[in-house]
Structures are given as structure tokens and as C-alpha cells.
Image (cartoon, rainbow, N blue to C red; front, side, top):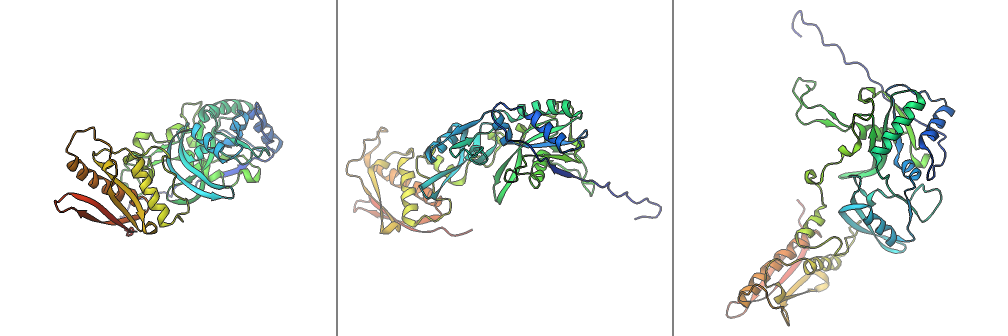
Length: 391
């Protein structure tokens, strides 16, 4: 500090509190959530002030909207997932007592990316076959609750509708905001100075998600506490619905760097459609034969973009240790009209490249040995499989 200069004042202390609201009764189709929540708040003498934020589990909204379906078995559940999603990001299988089951990370109709498209079989009021869908329009539901509860409780409120989700690269689940009203869901700090005076250029804080995650520490479906009051974030509460909703927290498909899992991206590039081939095991315990067979299935079912691939047949040998490529007995006639030998040569090279890509998805790689006739034409190839080297 230079002589005569005044010290910088310390930053003002900030306090964030979250209080779970007990006593919210079981919700069913057609129930008025605003009445039920206001009753629980009054019955428990919870004080509500301007700038408070109510965080409400999405299950309550879905139950009140009657978003309940039934699934007698895993196949019916997976059908519901497909009906309530707009695309698969990644898919794996896991073993259950009833056999293999599919798990999808899917892009939902409300824009989020969640396991099983956000469908839930827990807390469905005791019905074993019941499946709870996501709310039809969480932002609209949040705005209806904001208007009704602000009037009933005599305070300007923000509303967040939360749901739990898994996170890429991180173990465990955390709550996010899937609906919001009366609150800034994003805090854009671009252009503001950081502690050193440097202008920030990329920082945009997901305020609504951070609040949702904080309240999950005190509320929770397993505790019978589906809603909480947050105080200390009044600076982000806005009058009416001018602040927008949680839909803006979901990246558009065109802006999503992780729109597909790495396996799904390669399979699509090889011309394989959604679930043309059964996904890998979620625990990674598939043996070499299973992995190699799955790679072959991807290559066979994918769309061939190079002529001459039908001139060859593929088979697995050595318990999955080798893939043998040999001439097909009756190759399909090419529509391109090239010389059969030249097309077959092109097709063999294309097949080997496609196999290497499909094997990479299985954490495998292969060395290739080609065989040739005396006249120089190819007669096949042998791929020897090994584990891919770690980077």
C-alpha cells in the first residue's frame, strides 16, 4: 500500500439459508399445488419475505399434472423413455435379475439431458408399475406457482423447479433447475472485473442450478421434504416472469460439444442408427469375444459408403482374438459399375478402416496382415486384436 492510500474495504458478508418445508401432503392429479404449499408454510409458521426463492421438486408438479404412466416391465419402461425423448446421447446395458436392461442418457422434450429422459419410478404413491414423467412445461408451471404463491403469501418470490441428474465426468447426482420463474437463472459476469481488476470474458454462473443443488442438501424425496425456501439470493429475484425460465440453461443441440457419447458418435459415423446394435455393458465387463462381435455387427449393419465391401465376408476366430476377411461366395453386384477387382480392393481397405474404428469404441485395436494372390490382387486380411493403449 502506498503512503496516503486508503485500504480497500472488505467485501460485505453474505448469508445463504435453505429451509425445507415439512408437512406437504401427498400430491395427486388435479391437486392445487399453490394451496398445498401455502398451507404447509402457514402450518409450520415459516416466515416468507420478498426475495425468497421456493425450490420445488419436479415430482410434485408432475403428480399434480397427472403425468403418471405405467410400465409392467423393462421393455415398456424403455418404450416410455423413447416416447419422451428427442434423441439418445449414450446408451449402455446392465444386468438385472430379469436379464439385461437398457439405460439411456437422452435429450428430453424440455431440453435437458438426463438418464432415462428424466423418468422416475420412485415416490409414485406406492404403485409399483407407475412411472412419473417430467412436467409438460416446467417454466410455465413455475410461473403459475410464482403468481399464485406470491399473491397468497404477500411477497415477491422466485420459483425453481428442480430435478436430480447425473453429471459427466463426476460421480453422484446433483439437483438442477428444469423450471424457473421470477429469478435470473444465469448471472452473466462478462465484462465485470475480477479480484485483480481483470475483465472477465467467459464467466456466466448458472445461479438457478447452484440454488437447486444447495437446497437438495436439506430437502429430498427420501426425507419426505419436496420443497425448500432459500433466503439470501434476493438480488437475482425479478418481478413477474421477466427473468425468463430454465429452458435457457439447456444448450441448443448445435452448440452442444457433447451431443453424443464417443461410442454413439463413431457408430453414427459408420452409418449405424440408434440401437441397431445392442449397447455395451455399463460396467465394462464384456469379454473380448462379445466386444469384437459387437464391432462386427456395427460394421455389417452400418451403411457402406465405399463400393466393393460386399465382395468380402467377415468372421471372428480365436475366441475373439482375430477377425478374418475372406472373399464372399456370392458378392452383390455393384451399382457403381467399376471393375470388380478394383472395387474389391477398395472395399477391403474400407472394411479394415471401419473395423478399426468400431474396435476403438470397444477399447480395442488391431494389427492387420493382408494376403495377396500371385497376380497382385488381394485375397483377404487378418486382424489380430489387442487392448488399446492408454493415452
